[in-house]
Image 1: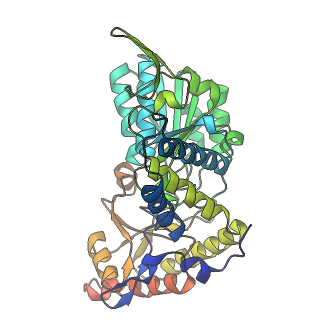
Image 2: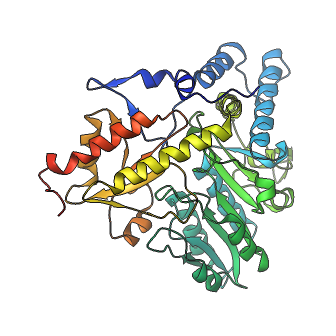
Image 3: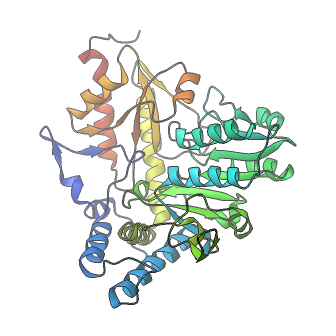
Length: 415
């Protein structure tokens, strides 16, 4: 059953939103870093641990059977959320784990060699950059970067010249975790497919806000994290097309991913179990599924419209405050409700502490995207990111607090 969207009713599902900070109601605008958890998620993990906790795929007793069923049911739920089949979903520790799995497996498979090229963007989170740096270093492949324009959009003309016959992998974010801009997935995929390159999508920032149909997207592999989509820490998913996963060797080996083992060799299970060695994050998977069921029960069209209105209110409000520089300030691209900015004359960390003293939680620093900040001549920025439970009043509280930053620190007022 789909619930009518009512932000107050949604907020009632999040116990932590009742928190006060220094006497102020908490205004949580750091969902881009980690989302808060609704009661459905907290209850699902607690219920599993108190009622069905056991190792999966390993025992014949009642608890083991129930735990395995819940674990695999969670895989079905996550698959349905992204338009996939259960066997296309590999459990990982998060998006970082999934991207390292892909890069490592490609290295083991010998899919790249000296002279080949890996293309990423200038807007990557470090998790979708450093694994490719390491793969290039180990294989002799060359790492290339699609630049970001001044407005934060990708330079697609440059992409045309960068993606070519030597390109073996194109990895890029669905949504920049700094700019909030939705990248042109179909255009990038088309360029990669024209040269036979594998596409890897970082969907961490899109999964909480956009409808995902990975099977229809054209990408070959994608990752996303539970803790950014109202689920637990320590769990994520790697999605891959059947033929792509089938062709990849395991990256981590051990128990639970084998069929036969001798003292000299082993044979491996098919995907997804081939990539799931060792003890699995069972309660986290159960909580992850509970988060996606909770989210899927909302009127997502109305929720998306609400978030779009918050994004416009946030960005237009920041534009109106003297001394604020927005990163990726463009009306020409689809966006999510996330905005990074710098305050003239005040360090980002000082801005964050000032806002925190008024109950407003934001992110400060380079947001694991140092090259992108360097592109804009910055070492750090302030990032505000909304969620399904964010209200217009909270955005206004944030904007009012930002408007007082420069005068508080004696940074003056822009002429």
